[in-house]
Structure formats: C-alpha cells, structure tokens
Length: 438
Length: 121
Image 1: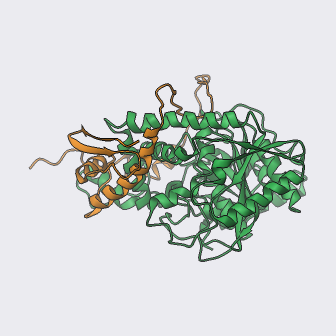
Image 2 (image 1 turned 60 degrees about the horizontal axis):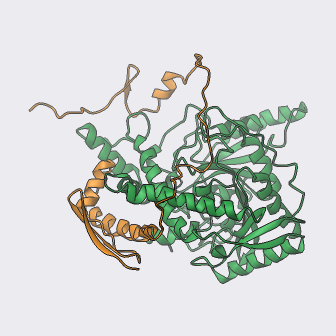
Image 3 (image 1 turned 180 degrees about the vertical axis):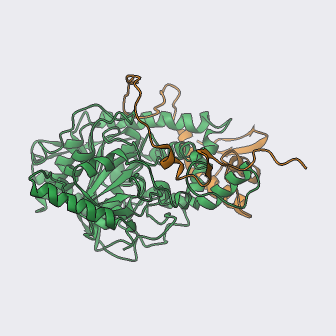
C-alpha cells in the first residue's frame, strides 16, 4: 500500500513491552498497547520526521509534538511515520517527495490526501488508529476515500506544538480510526490546553459522555450549495441522500440551510493557505536543519539551490502563489480580500447553526480517483476540498464517517458542528454508524 | 458584469478582464521577481510553466472581486483568542548539542554558512 515512509520497529517493541508491564500492573488506559501511526508532519523525538519532503530528509526532532507526547503517555505503540503530500499540500498523497500510497480498496486509485498514508494504514488494518492533520480537508477527505472515520477538531482543540506548520490559522491535528468511538477516544487523549501553543484553548474536553445519545430530536442542516457543488458524482449524491433518510428515520429533523458564499471558499482558501505557507516555509534555509545544496558559492546561492532542489512542484507553486499574494501592490487585492471573504464564510456557518445542531453533506464530491488523473491540473486537484475547506476557514469541527459505496468505492458523510461542539459532530456520526448497524 | 482594466504595478502591466477568470496573466518577469522574493531558484523553462499555472489559479481566485466587502472586517483566524501571559520564570530549554545535531554544518556550537559577500578578487 505504501502507507508508511518508515517503520519504528525498535520503538514499537519497547513501547509494547512497557504497555505489557502497565497492563499487568492494572495501570493501563484505553490506548495502552494500541498500535498507532503518525503522519510524517508531527515531530516524534529522535525519529526521522520529514513532512514528506526531501528538504527535511534526515531531520530527527529533539522533541515530541504535544499530540504525540500525549499518545506516548497514554501507552500507545508507535508503528511508524505515514506518507503524506509534501508539507501536507495536496489531496491525493501524490505530492509526497518519497513514494506513492495506494488506496486499499483499489490499488490503482489514490487514498486521498494529504494524510493519505494514515487513512490507508487504518483502512488496511495495519494500525488501529492514526494521527493526521487537516488544513483544508486533509483528514476528512482521505478518510472518506479510504472508508474510515476521520476527525478534524475545532481550531485550538488540539495543540499544534511540534506540528510542522503549513497554514497556521487553518492547521489542526486529529485522529483516524475504523469507528467513531475509537476516533473519539484518540481525540480525547490528544485534545486539551497546552501552554506551548498560543492558540490552544483552555476549555474542558468531554467527547465521550454524549457519544451514544443518538439523533432523536436533533436538527440536521442540509446546505443546498453543498448538494449542488461542482463535480458532485451522482453515486456520491445518492449514497449521501440515503444516509440523510436513514438519519431522518432515526429521529433527526432535516432542515434546509444556506451557505451562500460556498462558491468563493476555494478562491479565499487558495490565497490564505499559500500566503501562510510562503511565510512558514521561509524557515527552510538549510542553516539549522534539513537538506543543503552543496554546489553553491554564496549564502544566497545556497538558499536558491537548496529550495529549488529540496521542494517539490506543488510546494513551489504554493510558495510562489502566496509570495505573490503578499507582495507589495497585491496585498489588499488578494490577501486582505480573502480574509474578508473568510469572514463572510464564517458568518454563513454561524447563521446556519442558528437553525440546526449540525450540518451534513458529502465529504468529497467524488470517490477515490485513479492515480495520476489530476496531477497535471492544480485546480482539478484543489476542487477535492470544496466541501471540507469551509470548516477550516471557519474553525469548525468536522467528522467524516463512511456511508456506503459508489462504483464499489467508499463514500464519506461529513458532519460539521459549531465551534467547540466536537462532541455533537461525533454524536451525529456515531448515530449514523449505529443506524447502519455499526 | 464584465470589466476590463489595466494597471501598472512594480512596472509590470497586469490586465484584468472581467470576472470569468483566466484574465489575469503573470509575465515571466513577474514570475522571476516573485521567485527571488521567495528565494526559490528556477530551472530553465520554469518561468513560463509557473506563469501559465499561476495565471490559471489566479483566474479562479479573481472571482473574489464579485463580492462587495467594503464593510466586512477581515478574519485572520476564526476562533476568538486573547493574549496570554505566563510567569517569567527560568525553565530548561532544548539541549544545544541535540539541536545542533540537525544542522547541515556546525562548528563549536555555531551554524556554519557560506560567505554572505563574494570574495575579494
């Protein structure tokens, strides 16, 4: 499948032995001894962590990301680092600087991305759970395409300390698992206040208490703009329509809501995310860590050659786009404009949530697509995220839960909830699982 | 509604042809300028490649002009936050040797880089 960039066998054996000791002593928790995988963008102390990029080849972080440290403390067993699009930029994992990852349901197709390795590893049963990150859909979309559960928490729910940054106002860490309950258990373990991340929220986290409360009496919003979105495959629409009827049958009330600025989300996102990336990726200067081009005469030449040789095409494209959008004379027309449209999109969601408890839609307008079919057309690839990136722009929690198949391939149902209502998104997703007999 | 205008920014002519997209095109000179700002070296032929691709993406992004945002406040990030202060107490930091171990070249606890200026002839 190519889900893993590298295995951490010695670490896993040591952690498994320690887990055995803890369990024998009656000191275990729900994650003690559970095999997990870590997306290659989350620092694991002493383990090569590259963000899927050649520019970080050989980088061994001197510390753990907070989410990783919390899994370690919970007694999880780290199996390895999973493949992803370089610096989490992509929707198919084909932008990895190292290797392809294949979809376990059809090896000729992509697993989605950017957290495609984590999604594929869980779908193939290689691990019980995995960590990913979601900047525009990078957990939910591969979860949908691989037929597993993926959770993007509210912005600030999980610390970003030790996450190799792509777009800091959008990035969130979250879990993959086979079922909603397992995903909730992992999220409960990694969530919560961390003084090392200034955007981490000092709020209580209780994701399990209401998990089985069902959807009886809940109002579920269906945005017609998401149903009619560009590129929606009929088979995906049919699977989601069936899921909505099943949720209605379980006692939910379906209400139509409107997200009128949906058509502008992609454009706003593809200014804001590249702008932030162009700033964040300025640090790869070959001075303190990472790859250095050896054939340069001056420091400037070192920068130019290192960044030409070390970054792949999509990362370079986004750095160029973001630098352009932030450059003198264009800031107001692009970056400021996009930030204002971000306000309109967040306001759309706030208005919609006055009429419903959660919003349900497809996660991705398509099922997994053939490897190589979208790599020549950046806009076609960007359209993969059209139903997911709104939640990142608005800081909302979202869950993707499997809802049947189209053309024999998995379809994902996306559940979005208001900020901090992560438990509501999980509850609706879990209720759907129960309806389906999970 | 279609508009057509030309503006000169950084001495480079930019044309805006309405709202259907693909009107805004980057010149090769502009691509070179942006690549240098970003410290990205370009390979032969890449100026044209990026000019084409970025023009296509910006053509899509141009649709943001359709929206009247005069009275809208910008959102830098979506979750309300307040600055937090912590006690200014000495705490252990990362071990210097372990941090330096990731450097491509280090000597005596310093990072080593190429000369910033070219050598005297």
